Image (cartoon, rainbow, N blue to C red; front, side, top):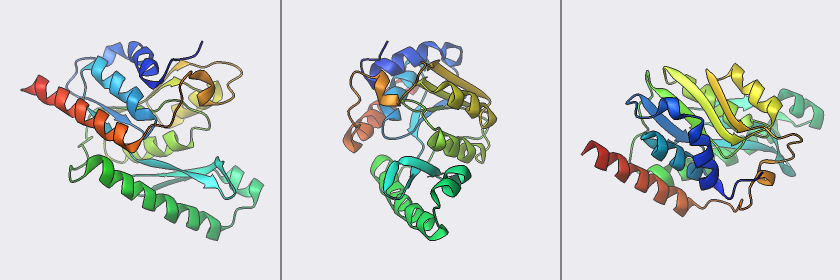
Amino acid sequence: MRFRDRHDAGRHLAAKLKRYAARDDVIVLALPRGGVPVGYEVARALDAPLDVFLVRKLGLPGHEELAIGAIASGGVRVHNEDAIRAFGVSQEEIDQVVARERQEMSRRERAYRGDRPPPDLRDRIVILVDDGLATGASMAAAAVAVRKLGPGRVVIAVPVGAADTCRAMRSVADEVVCARTPEPFFAVGTWYEDFEQTSDEEVSELLRKAGDAVGTRQG
């Protein structure tokens, strides 16, 4: 059974995270862009703040859909050494990909956050959300980076994921919630009726709406 879209997926995922509702130490961090509509629904259901955590996949040169690693906020790099060796990727090629993705990550940071500082994650329960897990390279990089910021607990949560990848994520998180793990998996987009790319404008609007909701509750 497929999700209608990312918002529908987020509502299904939120139902698996009810134990974290209405706690003042919880924050939802969504991986842009596709994770933001999912994270918006999770944050709304849990009555928790929403923010973004920037991570960029490092694509194999010439076959960018294949991940050879990822980078995340805070200078964290995660490499898939098996893929790098298998495809004979040189260090120069890796450095070129990293430089390009860092530039894009900086652009998105400015576009989504502007002058607003990143949230303080110390001792908080951080729920990292994306629209799905295939290889898990981006999510692994995000979890490693978040861990360096001193949270009390790191939870990885996705509506759908490959079963092996969901199991592997346990090595970088305190808890992994994959709402659905269909077999065979194929790809994340297979499990959505609407998997259109999320725009920068949609990300910014959802973050604004989530911020307004938090402000209303606190006011």
